[in-house]
Amino acid sequence: MPGRGGLFRHADFRRLFLAHGVSQLGAQVTYLALPLVAITYLHASTFEIGVLTTLESLAFLVIGLPAGAWCDRMRRRRVLITTDLVRAGALLSIPVAAALGVLSVWQLYTVVLIHGACTVFFDVSGLAFLPSLIGRERLIEGNGKMESARQVALAAGPTLAGFLVEALKAPFALVADAVSYLWSAAWLSRIRAPDVLPPRADRQPLRVEIAEGLRFVLRNPVLRAVAATGAIAVVGISISRAILVLFLVRQLGLTAGTIGLLFSVGSVASIGGAMVTTRLARRLGAPRALIGFCGIAGAGSLLIPLTGNGWALGFLVVGETLQMASIVAYNVTQVSYRQRICPDHLLGRMNATMRFLMWGTTPVGGLLGGVLGTAIGLRPTLWTAGALLVVATLPLVLSPLGPAAVRGDREFLQEPVLLGQKADGEQA
Image (cartoon, rainbow, N blue to C red):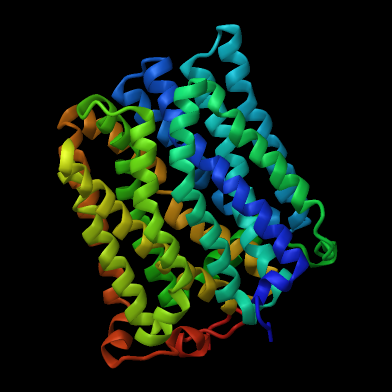
């Protein structure tokens, strides 16, 4: 059992934590700087911004499923390091092209496609790598700490990004994210735990292995509900993300520094969401916690369209705070459940299947954001995004989680057999 300090006494976990934390900080720079490159440097249209958001996440839809099977065939730490290095190179091409005066929106599209593909492989391998590194009994703690690092980055990153964009101009601020990926690769290379290559004798045709991951997810009613909720919520979040910065710049006239500061303030409370997840899930019971977290996220999303100048900027801060804190708590709980019930040889495929089912809708949301923003205006589009996050709670309520929440069950998510499924992925 971990003593005082918990997993921070685990040397390899510390290295993974440091790699994750700094790369997440750099990612926040890109989150703000990349659309600002398109908006302020290349003067892109609303539709072009929507296309940029779509392409950034297209890889989840196109290669999401085979990525899981491929990752289950490869050394997971090596995948993490390689994708970090490729993402760093792709991002560095933008300031180089800007310095040479040849940057175009087509290069941005290419970079986000490469970045998105690498992110799919990185995320799937990372989720599969953590259980082997720290053990399944520490997954809630491990995911909570990793999510805390991400939330600290979400809190500090936008302010840093805003000032970097104003000081260096948007294309050159992306150097910070490239450096963060190099930092991540350096720390990952120092992890001493064996990076095991799965035995070749156990391999089956790729389509068979992909189908095995799909069956594991689709036979589990809780995983099905989580995937459906995620798919709907991600459409709403992607619609909002596609046009929110554009709304703040062109409709409210805010500067990059102000936008970054607002996003940072709205992220601070989400750090607490990661820190108190275990306590809340224990007190409420995991079914009530998951449904409650999702409902609060929906309520927060409905405040964002009320944002205006002056005191009305507070709607953005409060809405982002409620939405992000709840999403953090929800994700730590459901990801830990997924990792706990899945056998090692299926971890990559299970995580890839969940990512495909949930994040595969991101391109749809990004494109809808651009189309709706052009057709009905930016503020009505934000209302549409908020409504979708409210609707996203329904699959959870209609699944076995709903009755379990009414009964006040606490251990429901810790007993895969209660869901009609054995731990090896076969039906009970």
